[in-house]
Length: 103
Image (cartoon, rainbow, N blue to C red; front, side):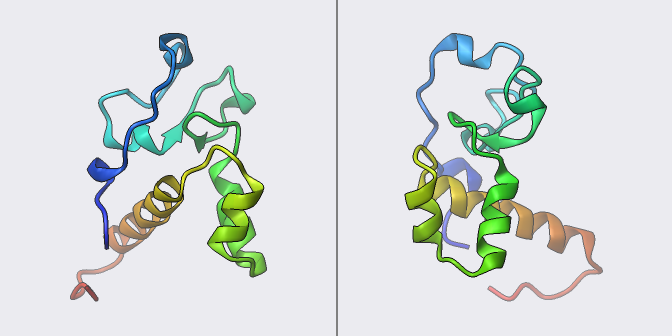
């Protein structure tokens, strides 16, 4: 995997953005995901946007490229999208019986 979550540059957002945020600012995933009951009904979104994470998977399942996704959802960075996919893969692999890592 090319980047760890800690390497995703944090978004510079106003302090009031974090009011009600359920993902702690010091959590590495806070550079990627935001969960706030006051925004998009608490659906997990890319931080700094109102774009639900689920949209990335829906989009990729339909066949369009990552570039098409990024062109269609302004504000989501390539680093955020790639890190979200890596985070999901990591969780999937952690849920499986022990195996040798592919990379």
